[in-house]
Length: 86
Figure 1 (cartoon, helix red, strand yellow):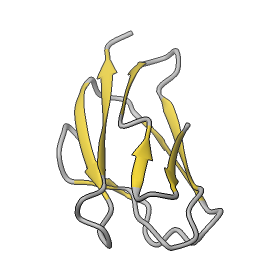
Figure 2: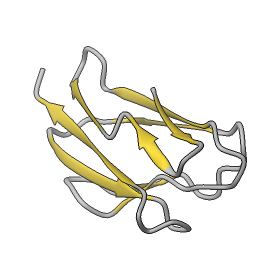
Figure 3: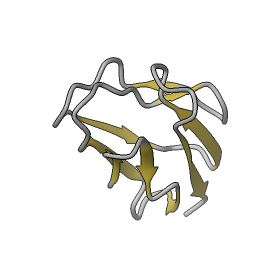
Figure 4: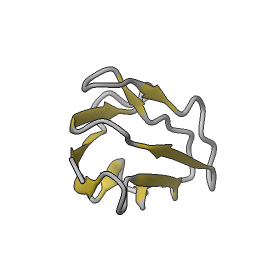
């Protein structure tokens, strides 16, 4: 589980998952302001849309690769998911 927490960063900033084992990731907005989880980098793109405080977003990765993501509202916020083949 990733969180967008107070202080304006994703925590943890990077995780590694394995297809078929733990390849579904959930982000939780633990901050008091809205964020997004947006990726145009990697084998597939995804976008949570607006996530108000307390909102969650889940994405299941099915293709190995490195996915860089960011918040559309706060360009300094970013992270990555490294997806390995099962």
